Length: 251
Image 1: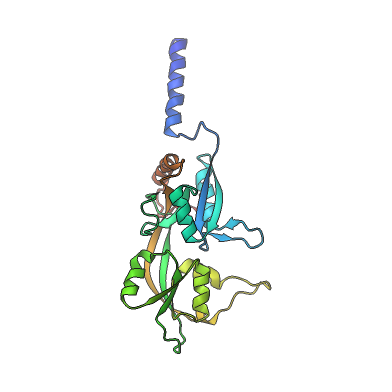
Image 2 (image 1 turned 90 degrees about the vertical axis):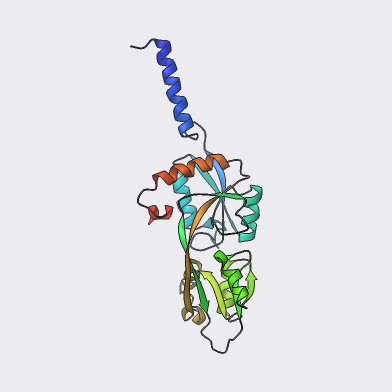
C-alpha cells in the first residue's frame, strides 16, 4: 500500500491530467457568442419572438453542451456576421472555406457541419432577357461570382437570401445564384392562413446544380475562447466516426 503522502500526490496528478485533457471539465460553464447569417434552414428569425432559430443553433447547442459550453445566439446579414467574427464579437459561426471575407480571420474545423448545394436558377419567362443575377452581397459563391462576371453577367446584390429570392421571383432578374436549402424553405413558407406560398416563377424555375460545398464551423481568431473551441472541436472531430458531417448525428 502506498504511503498516505504518495497516495495523495498520485490522486493530485490524476486530477491535474484530467483537467488538461478536457480543460472545461473543472470549470464553470463558458458562454460564447454563436452568430450565423440568416440562411434557412440553418438560421432565421422567428417573427413572433424575434429569436434566432434553425437547425444550426439546435445542433450546435447539443454538440457543445457536453463540454459545458453554452451559446448566445445571433443572426444577421452576412456582412455583419463577418465583421463580428473579425473583431471577436462573434466567437463561432458557420461558413464555407472559400469565403474571402473571413478566410484570414477564422480557424475552420476539420469535419464539415453539412454540405450546401449551390444552384443556378433561370426564370422561365422568355420575355425576360436581361443578364442580371440576384445574389447576396459579400458572397463569393465558391468562385462562381467571378467566373460569371467574366462571362458578362451583371449581379444585383442584396443583404440577405430572402431578398435575393424575392427579386428573382418578381422577375427583376433573369437569374438567381442561390443555395438550395434557403430557396426550398422560402417556397415552403406558409402565410397567415397556413397556406404554402405559391410563387409561379420559383416553382417553375429551371435549376442547374453547380457544386456541393462543405460548410464548417469557423472560430474567430480574435475570440477570447479561440483556443478552448479549437480543442473542443478537435475532440469532436475525433469522435465523428462513420459520419461525413456533424449534422448527420441529428438526422
